[in-house]
Image 1 (tube, rainbow, N blue to C red):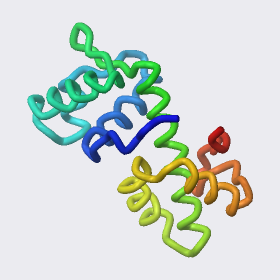
Image 2 (image 1 turned 45 degrees about the horizontal axis):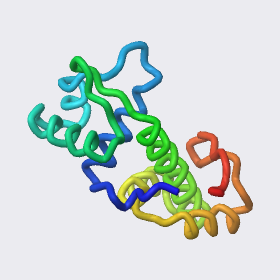
Image 3 (image 1 turned 180 degrees about the vertical axis):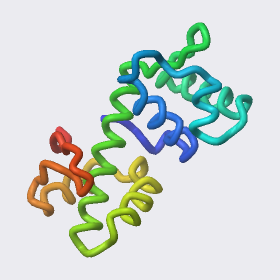
Image 4 (image 1 turned 90 degrees about the vertical axis):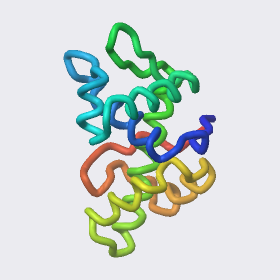
Length: 138
C-alpha cells in the first residue's frame, strides 16, 4: 500500500506529468518538465530532488524517469482520479469540473474510501473520459 499523502500537490503534479510521458520515445528533460509544469527550472529541479529523496524518480544525465515505486504511485493516483471523477459525474457534476476537482484530491484519498466508491459505483470499467479503471485495491 502506497502512502500518497506523503506527496504535496506540486509533487503530485510533477509525478503525473512524468508518468504521462513515460510512454514517449524519449524521457523528459528538466527543461521540458519545467515548461509542462509552467514553473522555472530551479523550481522543477527542487521538485525532482524531493521526489528523488522519496525514491519516486531518477534524474540521470538530464533525463527524468519514474522508479518502480514512482510508477506504482502514478498508477494509484490515476486510478483514484478516475474513480473520484466517475463518482462526481454519476451524481450530476460536469465532466470537466469533476476532472479538475479530482485532480485536487486524488492523491489524498485513502484506499478504503476509494474501494468503497468503486464498489458503490458498481465496479465501473471506464471513467467518464473513457479511460480504463483497472481494479480495486487489494
